Length: 189
Image 1 (cartoon, rainbow, N blue to C red):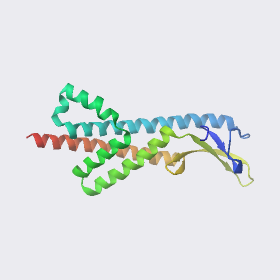
Image 2: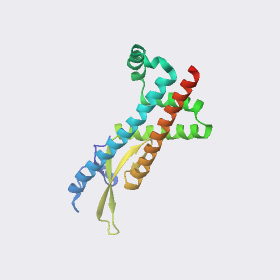
Image 3: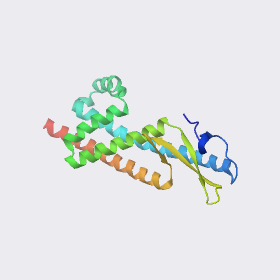
Image 4: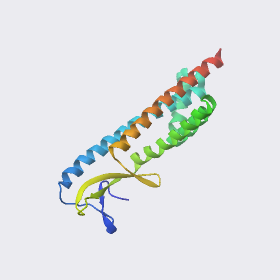
């Protein structure tokens, strides 16, 4: 595993030291930027996960979720033991029943993508890829993180797309939770 923030440089692999153009100052600024990105991604995914939890609770327990003892037992002994991956699997099954088919497929795909990105941000270190000018001189360091079987440069455009994905998935998760509430209300009456 690479040391967080190591410099990937040539055939010798990662090296922790780069000189010139204020590399140390840039590395420190990029470290802070990557911390903010990770925090933002994990915070956004936490919001998604919160809505998935509510969706699962409502779908499985229905009105019984309002009974404190039932909710506590469910939450402590079942829901809290589910991994993010299992929560996604359950939410995908619920979405397949309540969303129109195209929307359910898109939701499944979005959840799979965000799971991969969330796992990368939570569990993988990043490294710097040096960018050289036409003279072969170092002019920039680009932070890169392992995502799935590949890697992704943490550029501003990538982060903007990622923020849009997370925002869209939060909205879809809220919508699914609302549909479960309506479904439950219709079942009772």
